[in-house]
Amino acid sequence: MYVDGTSFSTAFMSGIIARLKELNPKISNKEIYIKLVEMTNASKWNETNGYGTPTFH
Image: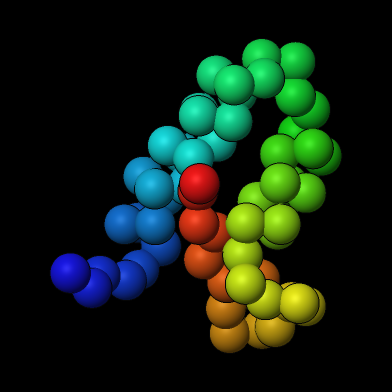
């Protein structure tokens, strides 16, 4: 299944962030940001896709 768009992506990102908070309730916003970047396959940011799509393991 393939979908795109910011409205659709918001639900997925909220779920990933909620799971990170569940695993570590004291995680800071900065630490969440770093984790999300680490979950992508991009080595640097670009204007089209940012860092890419995070993959939660």
